[in-house]
Image (cartoon, helix red, strand yellow):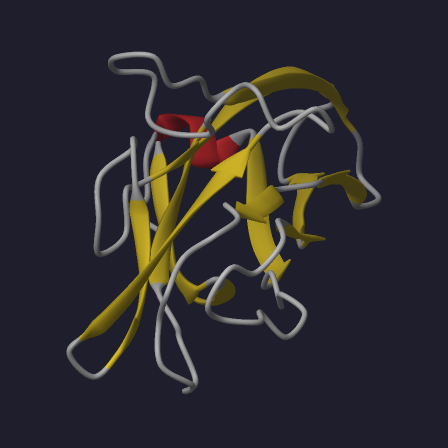
Length: 157
């Protein structure tokens, strides 16, 4: 089952298609976007920040086990260089699965990885949190502005 959550490096809309798995459990997603600190240009230093993706699953008919995968799309750029935009200006950044910011969080294609987890389906909601680690590389010469991007988070369970 796929659920798409539309977000800007802050996350917002969830579509829930019904499948046979939905009879066993329902899962919801909420997210807090990545808000980077002020970036100094030209020659700014690396800017790091984090967000939060929360997945909550609850049994509908039976108690058991389940699993899901969390994927992110490339937003307005590519998985190599996601882009924050302010009008015609673009600032490159990326989102990673690890604190070292070495594994690009994507859809599993190319050099990207997804996050996967298994869980016990209980009658009471179980919530797990996942941290997207964002980074704006140093030394980008861009004019002042508010730069944003929208990512789609897809949960498959």
